[in-house]
Image (cartoon, rainbow, N blue to C red):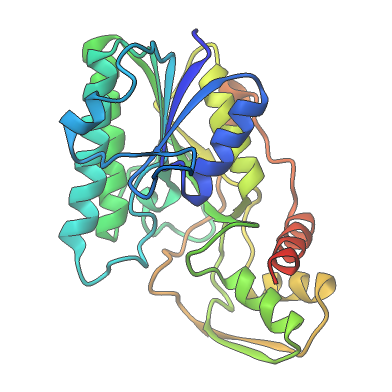
Length: 301
């Protein structure tokens, strides 16, 4: 495979870190993002505009596309679901068409573990589980996965969707409970959360996510159309709070028992498929990840 790789969403949290890792490993990375611009190293491009997309470096033969560009997460634009579903689905379809027309052989789609929807809390969640998205965001990821699988079957492409759990770590800009807990400790103030005391959350550090996407670029083949990317079998927010306070001492964090309306209750994830086909497993446990997140926040303050 040629070492030229196109990374979308490259001004965002996951895309920027993935592009950085690929470039360090010697790949010729072209970064695109709707928020790009002159001097940023990121080409400005709206993935919903196919003609604009097709103008990207027409002479370059990309060996792979890593598609991280999207409206990211169910918390964003909740009052405008058509914007979320439309932008994510159209952007993915256009990028697949770009791959087809430009003969790109490998396509990696940053999907989300939210595609599973709510699952029984004591049953393991594997890739074979039926998908029941509960938000327009999750539905847009299901649509993207289906489009990728169809393009791979019809146009002889090699592709996989990575169903990524809740990503945390330095550089995250969207709402994050772990960041809230760390910042409260750094500011020496108490924190009270009404939700999550008994609900399992699945977190994965940004560096592990970027490593998984890089592993998918170089994997010899895929035995599954999708892979779950998570770091552990889940923690309640009460357990997360305890881990945060071990790393960042501070006033107590109170966590209530209510369910999180933006996070489906789910059982523990299986990551056996990612280990088997991508040779990927998480390298960063929660305490280590919290420490790196706190260090990153201190450097920015």
